[in-house]
Amino acid sequence: MVTTSQTVDYVGKAEKGDWIEVHTDVQKVGRSAAFANCYFHVGSRRIARASAVFSVIAS
Image: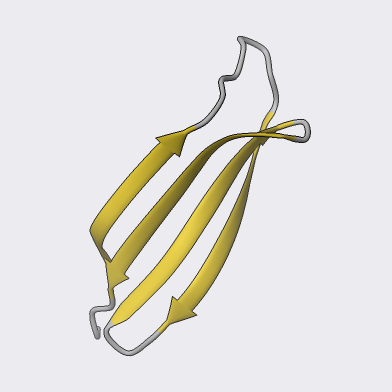
């Protein structure tokens, strides 16, 4: 896979020493493209969202 597009939206902040959890949601994997979102949390607070589109390359 090769990254075609990637964006990050910041909606909060983490302090030094905070534990950051990342949850990934793979939306779709097709023959030529794949789509996913990642959500970054400190506790129950969402601090960022990243989304990406990948080109699927046959090996």
